[in-house]
Image (cartoon, rainbow, N blue to C red):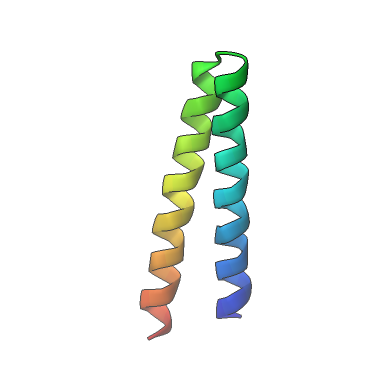
Length: 54
């Protein structure tokens, strides 16, 4: 189960990076902000899952 949750976090990071890149392409600061929030949230969630599994 731990690996499924980590996979979700990795996919969220990938989606966030895509949002940042697409936001830069059309000069959209809102999409960039959402991408950054998604990446930071996914990293925090991934660390939380790993620490809780121990």
